[in-house]
Image (cartoon, rainbow, N blue to C red; front, side, top):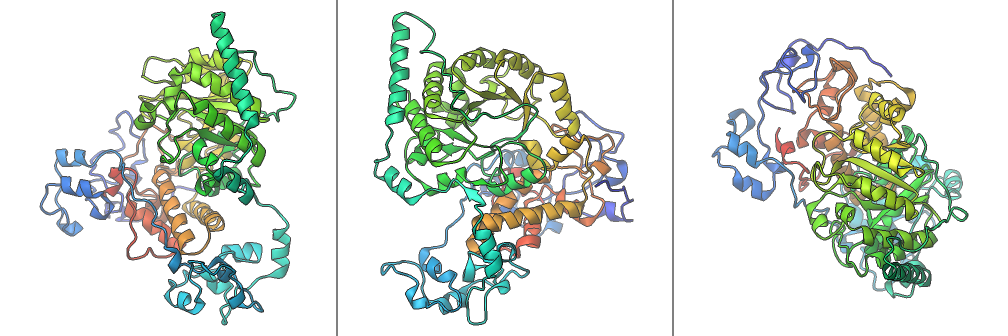
Length: 614
């Protein structure tokens, strides 16, 4: 919905706001990379100060100003060298601290309903959860208030007595109230799929899962490689044609939400589906952890019923390593990936499986993962061909243009991938070295799209408007578009593209989107304290991108471009100004509007050190 451009309130432009940068620019003085804002919205001479609670301990030690912890009105400006020390990313961010089982109410007791005997609910004598309902309720944090989304939507809240919105469905006698008609209606519908069955988990734990199909596929590909080497042929066996048994995906003209680690969670994907995303993909899952039956990794494969074209992205790792340490070994990488592909094929409902070879993180690259696969063609060929033999859904590759800037290699790899039986390729128009700096090279993407024929190539990079999208769709050979940061900054971009317009979305419409995300989060992670805080943290991660959106109505020359940054500005109302803040303190305030006050011991370290300014 288009909104007007009201004149800001008198005096508002000179009031300090949370997002603060010292700036003396006017609308007439614009430099390259600076987004042009209508003059009446630009803030001038705005001071900024450091908020120590959003700094890592090591960065606090780097500050040399003696007054760094003084109240904001007594702060002095940091020197240029001190500011430089507080740039870059926070690499050792704290994880969510789980509540001990002894402090959590037993799952058998939390949803006890009227007429049930609490003493007979839990059948495990050695259960380590809390079983004293009264004691739990006495120490339980106060209800947040408002109605429980899960109860209002489904007729029953699975968090029961632990729900932080429990006033909607907890009786005076401490029973979980259920609406029988609503619950019966929804319990008959499968809203989610790809859960890990206990028997499958046990077979993976005990190494009893039948991988004969994977072993045979690897044997055939390896034997073909030996024979090819003997005759000095460049090919490894015949091209695998599985079209007769494969479920096909129509990629033409589709808008593909990129797989996004951490922020690309299921609630966020649901938001993007509502705005028109055609294809979604789960967060990157580590193959070794899938094969170990780890619940947290299998959770990344979960699919909502709204995700009609859904894939999973896999990469391999040594058992026991972090999700972010993707170690590719020459001997067993193909084996791990092929086994993972078999399990995914047999135990989940997906429309395609994607191999991640675009990750630019140095640690992953040094271990041979992510972008390093761009130079490991033999390994990748074995992996693709063996995975193709065990999959009945398309196999796709997500890659970058190169490892080093100016030394493109994707054009050498893509024709080979076509002969390996890969069904589609997504190409991000930057090198590993570039990460997300400079502009994506769409001329090179076009060159590669022609080389990829007859398989589809999906272009990725710098799409933040309908204008960007249609320029690429209509003037290049790409089959479709992948959108990553653009969707995080403005998830309604899918609607803009399909309706060919710039949407001047209001601040209250944006707040409604956040409320819906919170509802989806409470449904997905639960509405108990743990679920509320998990939803809050993922919302904070998303807000670190959302604040970069600049409303259409205050732009001097729409649309916004992803590589341009605005000068400090105020919105057309107080809420719009709050949404524009790059300060972590402002993001926490937004979460408190939706999820209640943070706890006294709450801590959140933003991904980027710059967001500690306030």
